Image (cartoon, rainbow, N blue to C red; front, side, top):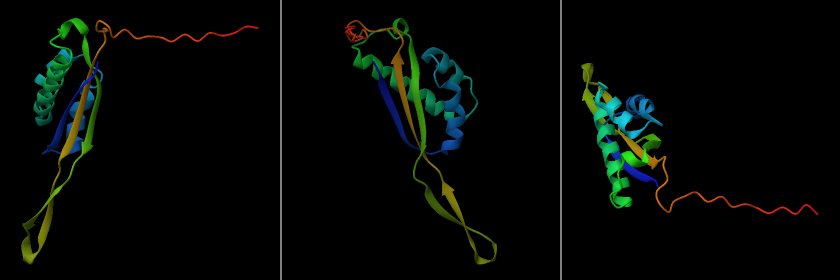
Length: 131
């Protein structure tokens, strides 16, 4: 069962956020939280909070199942560019320089490696006629 958490309009460039997001892509949730805790970038604090939200969403969907028992992992993490705030700063000789304040959108999808009860993957077998 998948659970999704989204962070919209985070005041940081998408390039800086992707540096940290690439480190935790595909990792188990516990290992990813450890990596984020000891990463010295601002993006790690945003992603840690978002990952905890995704885990909490998974618990809400599964009516309080234990996270450790079902081996949650980050199945998908997307970092997209958001809108830019455009500002002007005064420059010498009566000119103005444009300042672009970047934002980004992050989506984290967590999934469980161990199937939940009643969630077993069913394989449909096709019958072949050998006549």
